[in-house]
Length: 296
Image 1 (spheres, rainbow, N blue to C red):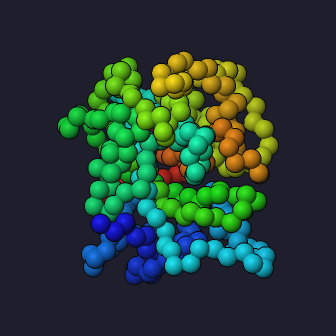
Image 2: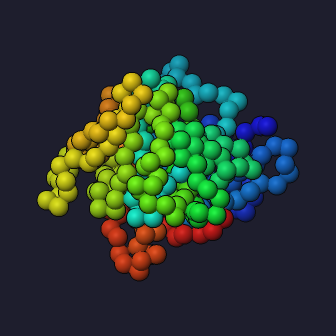
C-alpha cells in the first residue's frame, strides 16, 4: 500500500505540498492515502518546527549555486509513541550510532506508518523497537501534536535530505514502570539504550527546546544523572546518564552528539501539559508551546 501523503490545508482546501514546502505558518497538515478521494484532517492540537529548521533558513537566504533539493518528493508521515506508565513516567530510547538518520539521539519509539494505521502503526513500532506489546483494553491514547522534522536538522550540516511530519501520540498504560520494564526487549539494530523519565526531569529537558546554544545552569533539585539501561552484546546494563547530556541542544556541526531530539523535547512539553490538565495542577514544561488536548 502506498504511504500516506501529507497535504496542507489552506483556506479550507487541501493542497499538495512538496519537499520543504510545508511550515506551521502556512496551514494545517492533513493526510491522504491514495487512492482514497478524501483527506483526513487530524485534530492534533499543535504544529511546530524547530527555530533553526533548515527549510526556514532556505526561505530566508539566497541558495548557493548548485544546491538542489530533492524533486518529485512530498512530505512523509511518521508516528512516535510517548508511552506513559501508570506511575507517570515515559519511555525514551537511544538510536544506535549505525543508523543513517538521527544516530545517537534519544527519542520515543516510532517510524513511518500508513494513514489507516496511525495508532496501530505506532504500537507496532513500539513493539518492534522495545519489545513491549500492550494488551488490548489496558491502555488509552490521545494525540499530542505535530512536529515538522528535517534531517539534517541544521542547514550548516548540509541540505535536508528527509522531510517528515511526525504525529506524537500519548499512550497511557495501566501497567507500572516496573511491569513494563520487565517486558522490554530492545531491538539492538535500532536501540542502544533506554530510560524512563519522570515529570521533574522531563520538564528540565523540555525547557531546552528553544535550540539556543548558551549553556543552561542545572537546577539544584535535579539529580546529576539519570538511570538508564545500555545494551552491551545484547545484554542491558545500568548506565548513569549525565543530566548534562539530556539538556544538550542541537550542535552546529557535530551530527552524532548524544542528546534528546528537539522534536522529543517538544513532545515532552505537551505531555507535561496533559499531566497538568489531568491533575488540575500546573506542570511547568519550560519553553514548550501551549496546546489543547483534542481527540482526533
